[in-house]
Length: 296
Image 1 (cartoon, rainbow, N blue to C red):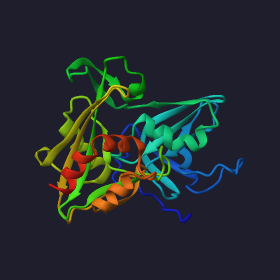
Image 2: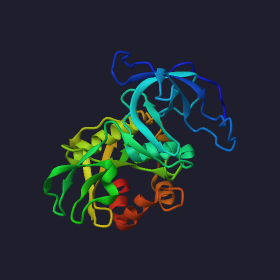
Image 3: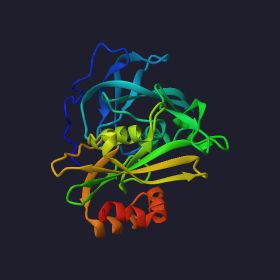
């Protein structure tokens, strides 16, 4: 791994914002823990300038959203990791306009936190509207952290976006090393936020994960499916883009992208290199998806 350090990539941060902190990095990406050499840091770790803990120790912080070593960084505090044994806190600092949820943070800090009894507290947790099985809103919101413990009959809505270029190739992206299913390929997707429609959520997810801007009118509904086991209602859309549309990957989330023709795409999605959850939905709606992407 190239351990060349970048001085400070945190341009665009408002230094007067209440949640902005500067971190001096002591363990850059790719380095080993000084006492436990087998622990290799996949995130930059350092100490927050001017902040000490109740014990008088410097406040430790993980920096998410960067995959290269840095010497120092200024960003937003988005989460706190609470360790119970020993009792201490670590902060999570992220670049501006880089949204993360609790599951993503847990995945990224797992390389260290697997050795502790700890929990992640999101400071601005993503909220979803709660729906019944007929997609009527139930009048309250649920935090993303409750996704796996929703009551029977309660659902949230998620979207999947298959992005097709005008030459007929479909976009796939590769997950970061820090995520579950590391380095596996996927199409764009995620849950819609409280107050969003499925089409609005699809446009936002595509923009956040790939930097691609589309409007709702350019989306084509491919399938609509309720998964009772996951308490989730899925909307899958096809989005159309031009040949000159650039892809800008979300830091910490994706690390590569490729556009594939039909044969390459089907071979990939049916292989063990693809995220299993979307493989299952592809198996259910194989003919409909292939016809929409490559026959339409």
